[in-house]
Image (cartoon, rainbow, N blue to C red):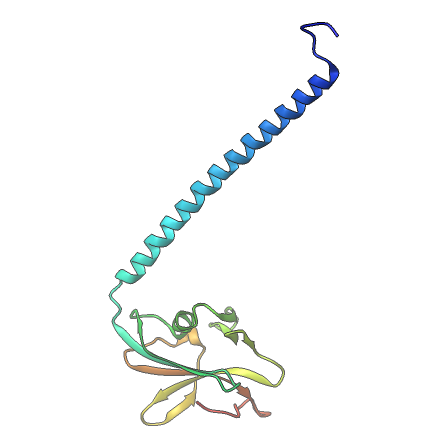
Length: 170
């Protein structure tokens, strides 16, 4: 081999090294872009959470959920913004753990809460409470019920009869 001339093996080795360097540069660049976008999103989330915390929550509501398996949870003294509907409040108290379809009849149809889904024999029922008639099934969907101060609502998961009347109550 003559001095100053590269062998085929050396050229191949240099080609592989150049390729690997190019890959490292590309991956590093993508990492920087991802890192930048991640921090931008994190900053926006932080701003959003701060804005939510800053809101002057004015209404207090209580929500009861009976999962039909012995688990029952009260979300007492839930602070809500005036004008919120019961669907929004349900999302709030369950940390978004609601499965629903929207809005064929003007409101969300709740098909599951907390991972418990409607079945052929059991469904989620929405209840309202007042001191005169106590608990009664809601006449409207959760989007159509505006939460007022000191209101009480319930969701129950239970069976129903042939007229679709629930076999349970809160």
